[in-house]
Length: 216
Image (cartoon, rainbow, N blue to C red; front, side, top):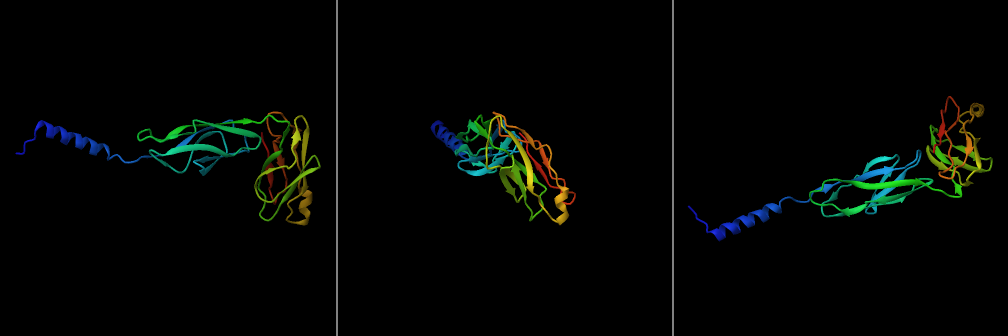
């Protein structure tokens, strides 16, 4: 039987420990956290290390789709601010450690802008393909929407002023559709702490079923 001296045994054990310690390999981790203060009908676009864009449309938890290897750094930033709000990131950068697991400590805090003027904005759903609707605010500022999604009137309003949205040009599929559209709940007063917003604008057309929604 092979006999080892005390020194040889010590060196053998030390080598084994070092070899075993290096077998763990790199562990990937996801990067995420929480968004707070995001208003309805708005969204914030986040980046990690300048890429891997993630759109967050509601307050709550979020996780980037691309994992980060252990030993690599992460840096979460805001690429696109939500309409009428400003978002800041805390605990947004660091290094993924070998045994820390997924990162869930990033915090994105969004607050309404307090400004002298605010935008009137909202979303369009139910608009038929190949049609468009033109909206007027206070009979002056207009915006034509050709696809479902968000829109913003080009003219901002001062805080305390009123806004009234009407349909200037309807999405028409037959000549008689012009008589089937009407708008309600489309006026209110701008506030100092948020973009001007409506509850609901409805275009009542049984065949088109178009609906425009705006909310704070």
